[in-house]
Image (cartoon, rainbow, N blue to C red; front, side, top):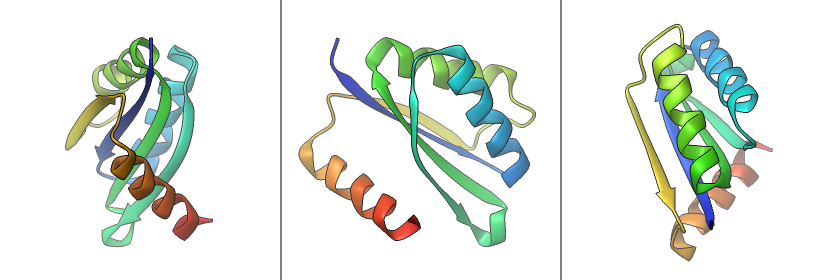
Amino acid sequence: MGQAYGFFEIPSVTAGIVAVDIMCKTADVQMVTWEKKLGGRLVTIIIRGDVSAVTQAIEAAATNGIKKPVAHVVIASPHEEIIKLVNKSVNRVS
C-alpha cells in the first residue's frame, strides 16, 4: 500500500505524548512532527507510514488514549501540497 499521513489533534501535552506512545507501539509509523497550540492546551500530532499502519495507529490512540481526540484523520496518498504543508511545519518546529 501507499504512504499515508495521519493527523491527530488532542487537548493537552500529556495526552499527546500518551497518544504518540500508543501510535508508535501499535503500528510501524513515524512521528513526523507535533505542534502545540493555545499554550499546550491543544496538540496536533502528524504521523506517517503505510495506509493500514497509520489507520491502525490513529484508531488505537483515539480508542485507548487518556483523552478523546478533538479531531483525527488519515490521508492516503496525500497530494504534494499537503506534503509541502507538513514539511513547512516540520521546518518551523525544528
